Length: 151
Length: 151
DNA sequence: GCGTGTGAGTTTCTTGAGGGAACTGACGCT
DNA sequence: AGCGTCAGTTCCCTCAAGAAACTCACACGC
Image 1 (cartoon, rainbow over the protein chains, first blue to last red):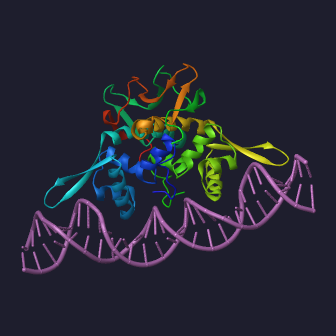
Image 2: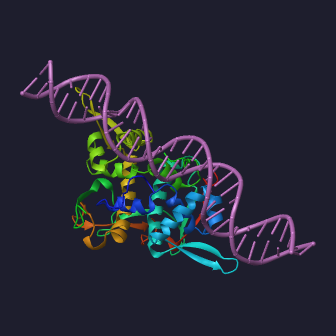
Image 3: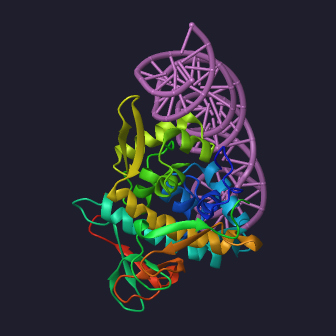
């Protein structure tokens, strides 16, 4: 958790960051997404401190992004899985990945490829307009107050 | 900057977070995007400490996401603007906003509306497949190693 | 039954980033 | 001369991140 609380700002970006924007949280979600679900696996893969991992997992579970479930009774063992809410966050992660591939990959090329099962191809995520389907660019939209403004 | 350096992980998400994932950075980019470009405006709007704002702006400029330019000669006054690299990050912000609207807005409704100039409507950002154009869901893709894996 | 190993955390300690508030410096206004 | 504005700096204090050791419940091999 950051020092400042983003959660009660009247901004969906700030509120999302409050849930999943702290350092490590997006990477934890990415790992769970690609199948790294157990505490020790996560700790090793990320190089995160165990204390912080505990705290982040608890927070993400608390916000309904991850679900903790027991996969062994004796000994008691747990793993984490994405909830539907968490699964939708992967769309944001894919958009981030597109940007990172474009602007940070360099000579070596992208570290990962995404294969879309329904079309079978290597694909990228694109951000498009929900009405006209065109690519949505930041300089082609106007941000206006919505009903939930000034919370 | 976080304690741990995400920049040299072989992951476009981690690298992107290293550039723009620290606390406050996405909100600074959002503000510049919607026209809040000056130091004092940003400080007031976000409630961020001036020290941290200075540091974040410098970092974002250093990574080529923002550009600092003088808009007055005497007295010397500066403002910040998105570079093309920074402007593309707004697509990520719009995807984040979609998620936040869906999962955090509640009764009051979304704090902001996005009007797409080319179609004139209030729209949302959707994440779609670059090949087949379908909505791209996290559970419909496989993540494979790319050429830049294992950096 | 005893030592070893494993998974899933806790605890302790140290360091350093974030928050707050005051200060600086160049200039404009009256 | 004095006040206000913008764009930062500087200072101090607190609290979160990192590292490493410790705990606890159990399984396994001998």
